Image 1 (cartoon, rainbow over the protein chains, first blue to last red):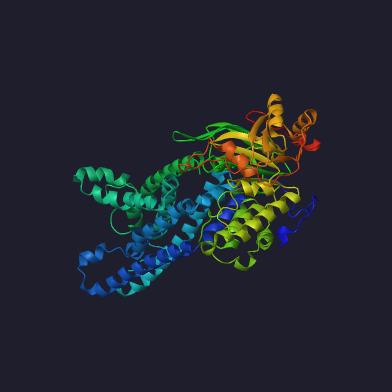
Image 2 (tube, each protein chain N blue to C red):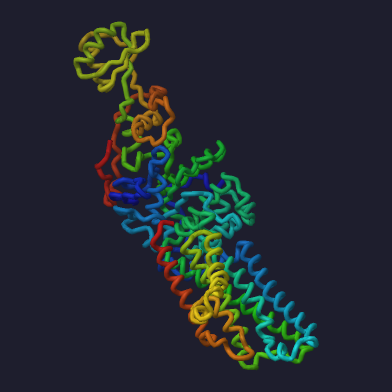
Length: 281
Length: 340
């Protein structure tokens, strides 16, 4: 074995001489290698595409089949864009939460984090590279999911003569907005993973914040809920995906509502970064 | 090369490492010894910046680990061979590590070849045996071709073949002029590989010396002397300041506190005939047990440490402190504090 052949002191150089220092570029490539080299990434992204496209298609097909029996008032309020992307922003966010949380928590559960931080001890760099890789992967996949779900849904709704096109008002915003909302959910979960360092804890608490708190909020007296709703993280998804009829009066504008969620996410990411750098690995 | 100064680390109210100072000199195999729970792994984690010290500093070539330009080119460290994502292939595991330090892709294939894992390079690591994981971990340490290697308990849990492989590898790495800093609680393992020893117990430095010094300084070193006139010799030796432990029925005495030459001279001066005069050196195991007897954390009732003494008698060598080579001397001497 080569390792056991003894060479005396003068070792031939096996690497090109170093220049500069290890930094963000290499760490970014490393994080991309990590995310593309485990099966769980493919499974979660496949499930994301399947539920986003499948549920959008099912709602669209079901509506088309039922169209002739629908009351005119229901037809008037039917939102074909929202129907086609509903799978993405209702269920896709659940799936992306798993992917986002696991980016960091899987390293803690396997112990890989210690190996990672030994190779690259500059923790801020590692954290930033992880955020960028997750954001890019999630953006690409959610955009693909959003547009496929939209076009498939509209083709299934063609018989209703009520299908949407991207050139109609608010439609492009709803399609892109759904993808952005789901991507942000992934980053939100990543930050929760950085803070809690435990997969189940991170996923549970993010689902609690995105799904359970809004449900509980409904139990509050109506006027309280009206005031509170716009400050809930999930309001962004609801506001962005609506293209037909007036915006809910108790919410900010769609992009305003997205900004609320984005600010929460940035704050959480900052807390995660602080703890990631400060705590023992 | 590695400079540890006043290092202290607490976990809750338990002190894992307590005001620890030592240096690891270049170009040697330095054994880092201590019973389980002595703080070896904690110290290594502190060196790598995985944990932050409560007090004290650690530098590598004068810099903190996190500030090294290319950490993997300077230090190859393996603390836990199982600290890998089991769903990733051996190749991709090494690739993602290499990429952080801008190391060429071909290097991954080279180190896999070096440790003999080429055939399973594309297999996911969750199916790896401990021996294979250990090889993978060592492959990772060699990626950057570093001059300093750090291994934490590398032979723990390995089969004899794996132990032999690691031992040969460490010797080969040292022969290439690399510094190897290796921890173990198996003294017998260090006896064959380490030139220099750092011994800790309960997070504190117990010894920082060459292997020779370590054995010689331990009270386990005695002189066995056989004579037909034991009473005369025993009296003379005691007068000269030695301590005599009567031996078996063959008239042999065991003398401590004097070296062989002194015992021989005393015998000559008193006209005592000697049939045997032997330096009995403690094995490293015995010396270690004695040194750490007070600092072992958990001990079974009735365990008497330090009763395994006097292994094969070897000709006595004066314990000579190993001086650093001139070109290395500038990089820092060993601190004297806490030496035995």
